[in-house]
Image 1 (cartoon, one colour):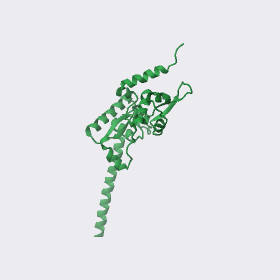
Image 2 (cartoon, one colour):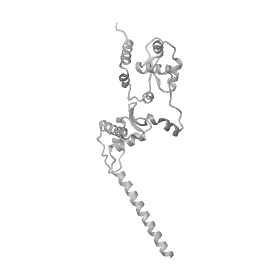
Image 3 (cartoon, one colour):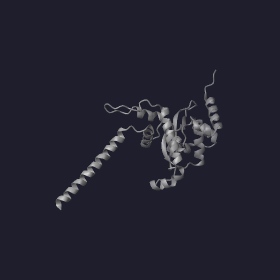
Image 4 (cartoon, helix red, strand yellow):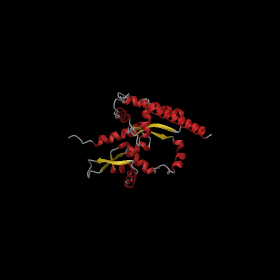
Length: 232
């Protein structure tokens, strides 16, 4: 009886070893087969902690270090190829309704959960409620966003109230930052928005502000024109 048991155990070990070898070979083969551009693009965006631009993704794919004798099948891809792949993935996710979207924000692309799933995601992560801005903070932020770069005195001239504490709070939230100094007497600091501002409000770039309210965009242009030195 003992020899038969030993033989049976040996056969089982051999079967397991064969299966493991086959599985390993399958993994190696799948790695050897160049993934599709869509797969690579999707994986890079998923792996990044910050939104990735099409240019950054293209550079990462084209400049990947190669093993000896290896060729890069994506050595000639363009930013348009990457953007097409991103838009395809975004379209598929939207159609499937999986609770996750691929969106373009802050001049880059990232995955984010759909707004309707927020309460469950926060419960899972034990996260605080999303940052909420007071009306005064929103008004000040809107003025800065549309008329940047802008000095604090100009903001106060528009709002008619002091904005020191609001500007300080927005700076601490990393929604605005100092971008330089004005040519006005005393050379006060100028303020503008940050990339986090774009991410927070789901904007691709500042150009989308013009689409939201063209009138404020024209007002910003008029303010910039007024700031130009007078000739003569």
